[in-house]
Length: 323
Image 1 (tube, rainbow, N blue to C red):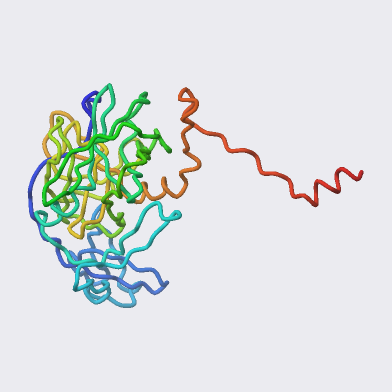
Image 2 (tube, rainbow, N blue to C red; image 1 turned 90 degrees about the vertical axis):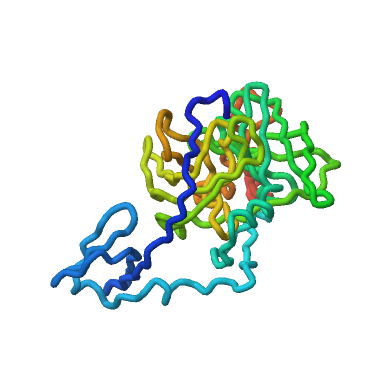
C-alpha cells in the first residue's frame, strides 16, 4: 500500500530446482524430511531448510527417498479440493501438475484485485465466487470507504469494473489480515483461487506474485522461497526473492500448482531480494475463526463485534421459574 513505507514483496526471477530430499523414519514413530549433506559413522547430517540436524544412526529405522513417499501428481493437473468453513474457501491438496508462470498468470489473474481507499491502495484476491476476498489489514486500516477493482474476462479480454459496495467482514491487526465482501447485488460470480499448504513449501521452490505495485495493476513477478520460517517480531514469515513493492500488499503468492501459499505484506527497505509473505496457514486459521475477528460495520469506531450470549435451555428456565 502506498501510504505505508514497509510493504513487503521482493525481487528476482531465479529458477532454482530443489535438491532431492530424503525421509528419515525414526524408531519412535516420528519422521524427518531433509537434504542429506553427509553420512558419518554414528550420525547423519541433514539440512531441514532452517537448520542442520545431526541424527544418530541408531535412532533411524529407515531412510527413504522423498519421491517414494510423496503423493502422486494428478496427471491432468486438476487436483482434488476440499471446501471449508461452510464453503467460504477451498483448499487444494498439493497434487496438481506444475505449470508455467505464463499459463497460471493468465488463468488466475482475474481472481486478483486492486483494493482502493481514500488513503492509498493495495491488492487482494477472491477466495470464493460470492465476492469474499483477502487483503492486508494495513491496506484498509482506519478506512471505511473501500472500493475494489476487478478485471472480468469477457470475449478473451479483461474489462475493469469498480465495485463501491464493499463490507469489512473481519480483520486481525496482529496477523495483518482482513476479510472483505463485495455486496453489489448485480455482481456476477467471481473467479476465485485455491488455498494451499505452507508446510508443503520447500526452500528453493519457485513462486510468483500478482498485484499492483505502485498502482501498476496486474503486475506479475517471479522468484523462489528463500526460507519458510523467517522470524520477525515474534511471527514467522515466508521470505522470498519475488519482487514486491508498495501496492503489492495483500496480494497472493502462488506456487506453480496455482495455489496461494502466502499473502505478500512487506519488504526490507534499502535492500534487494528481501521480501516477505504471511504463510497461508495463518490465513486459513483466520478464516476458520473469523467470528472472533468480526468487524461491526454499524459501529466503525469499534473493530470488534460482540456476539450475543447463549440462551439458557427452555427446561432449565422452567425449573428456575417454578422455585
